[in-house]
Amino acid sequence: MAFALVVGLGLSSCAATGAWDGDATQNSDSTQNSDSTQSSDATPGGAVTPSGSLPQAAPRTWTEPAAPSTWLEPQEPGAGEPGDTGEPGSTDESGAAQRPGSSATRGPGPAPAPGAVTVAQALEQIPTKGRAPKTGYARDEFGRGWKDPDRNGCDSRNDILGRDLSGKTYKPRTRECVVLTGTLADPYTGGSISFRRGSSTSMAVQIDHVVALSDAWQKGAQKLDADTRLRLANDPLNLLAVDGPTNSRKSDGDAATWLPPRKAYRCEYVARQSAVKLKYGLWMTPAEKAAISRVVASCPAQAIPAV
Image (cartoon, rainbow, N blue to C red):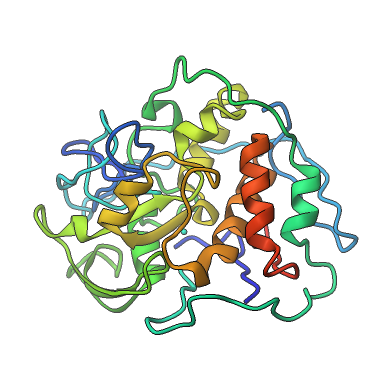
């Protein structure tokens, strides 16, 4: 299934207090997860053109949002990346996951829409290099806590919970921002997960950075400016609500070391990773590209989400 997501869509793993719950525990790269506002060589900002070419544009200027509204309550503790704080939710994007019971494998699928960029085409435009040292990496290099780059009055973590969960209820007087309960059709496992907000329950659903932040750091993000890194950490294109334990097992792995256990979702997963790396001018290792190429061999028409 072709998977498309418009970047501007403002729809989870750190907080001011608590534990990180993003791209997981050891060497994890999860995003900060909280229930309140706060889980390269190339230039970011490439735009897709009808021809399939994605020229790079200069980074846009991002302005720090005003102080969070008083109706956003304090963050709650979660679990995740070492040194991070906040409620579960990282690694972290659409959650157009297939429902439980979907086929374990997928066929070639339909031809891409006119002007769509396939994963294979994107790989040709993404540089190939070795992994750089992790020296200097810290989660705070991508901004501390969840932010509100689209300035809709709701932090990125709650935007993603609101986007990816069904049957949601919201905390009163939060203008339908703070998600209290809901159900996730988990794209990584195919299971159905009940979400209930709370210090001991929120970890069941985490927000995954599809491209882990430490992986991004070692593949070009350390050369990006602070505003661009903040956008990367809060970009809905790079965020997915997923099963917490599965997200922890992913840690900060790339496609060469980790793929979703649900095979039916792998084409969409590597398509999203490719879109993020293309958009922000990040590179891939030879092993990473080889792994992605093996996945899309079964779905050659798979297009990347709109960047």
